[in-house]
Image 1 (cartoon, rainbow, N blue to C red):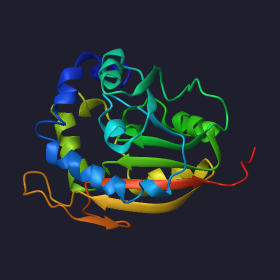
Image 2 (cartoon, rainbow, N blue to C red):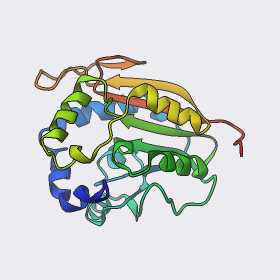
Image 3 (cartoon, rainbow, N blue to C red):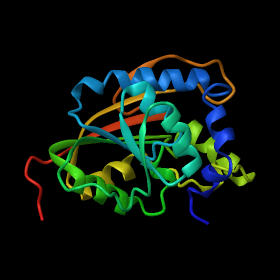
Image 4 (cartoon, helix red, strand yellow):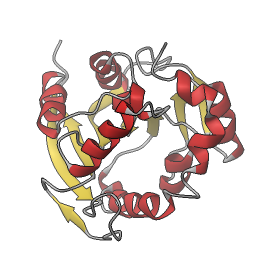
Amino acid sequence: MRKSDPFQKYPTRYDAWFDGAGKKIFALEIEAFKLLLPEFPKPWFEIGVGSGRFAKALGIPWGIDPSKKLADIARSRGIKVIEGVGENLPIPDNLLGTVFLIVTLCFVDDPRKVISEARRVLRDGGYLVTAIVPAEFPWGRYYHEQAGKGHPFYSHARFFVCTDLIELLEEHGFHLVKKVATLFSTPGEKLSTEIREGYHPDAGFVIVSAKLAKEKKC
């Protein structure tokens, strides 16, 4: 089973989270992104665009996703979607200004290949923006527990430790520019709306922006 298969099987359940249990969390994550958006060169592209929730809210016009059912929902929101995988982007070299991986890297089959493909399609000086639920923080541990109970989505996830993610980016020629963190409430507590820059050991959602060197190395 591919890690993307549950999203094809349960597209409505996935999309409903944004209007239900995750509504306030999603709004907070969007606010965190807005602190960074002016820094990112266009054109923008999202790998793992899903049902288009983040793309629509952030103004990302197009993306790729392996789930036809989620892609159709994203198209209904005005997003242009390629049906495919991040490991094999049907995009020319050096085309994009910014590539987004928003809570996607944990669900791909080959994270290194996805980052390599993102590097290939980015222009010199382009940005790769990765958002994760860190494995070592309370929300990551909570989702890991849910995975152990057979959750249809989290049971297929590979949660990253922040330092491992940054090392992976650096391996592919990116250098860290900025981190923004939010979701400081632990699961079950009243939601904190605080957003901070930098590394924080109690954050449940971390955005890492990394820039490609001006001259790509072969």
